[in-house]
Amino acid sequence: MTDNPTIHLVELFPGHLMLNGDMGNIAVLDRRATLAGAAVTVTRVEPGESIPANADIITVGTGPASAQRAIAASLPGLTAPLTAAIEGGAAVFAVNAGFHLLGRSVRHRDGSELRGAAIFPVTTEPSDRQIVTDEFTVDSAEGRLIGVENHAARVHLDADAAPLGTVVRGVGNDGSTEGYRAGVVIGTHMHGPALAMNPLLADVLLRDAFARQGAEYTRTADHDRIDAVARGARQHLARLARVSLDRA
Image (cartoon, rainbow, N blue to C red):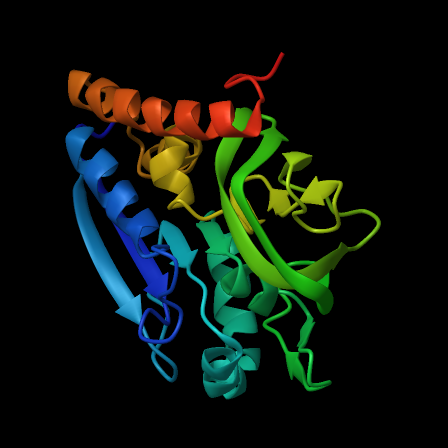
């Protein structure tokens, strides 16, 4: 086993997809990996730039329709390098617009349609209203996730595609399911940032990344202290939503 692995984090298009605090997700991964004894590199990739071949975890945030159009020409070019990264074992964590843009297509309210990167087996259509849920609650394989949703989309998963989880409170993809998941390749509408609010999900990604480097992801007392703060934030939202903090 490797005692001091190097974890390579990549953030896609942060100059365009930077709303709702989602850039905090990569900060969470950086901090938790460092606390677990890893060296960490962070590479920010803008349109026209290459995704590093050694990427362990790739994050994508959200942005308005104008930002999505600005990067639209770059999306088809992501298909091959992202597919190669995923096939090589890299994790992906994409939020809201980033989630939609990694699908096959995104249609906006004005009728325009963007071709996506086709990494996720999903298509996105506009909803008839802005969807805002301050206590967005989802049951996933790892447990109950709580955060915030703010979007105007309906997401359709292919029949054989699996969601991240089931909606307890909020709308998610369609009022029933939320996001997309294939192992450590994840798309979601959850803000918070999602990985700060739900560190168990961050640990899923990091445990996999450490294993790729031949190392064991070991939590510390510092992780526990951070997680206690996150639990308090989730607990507050759970009270507002009148749901239990943990899945029954």
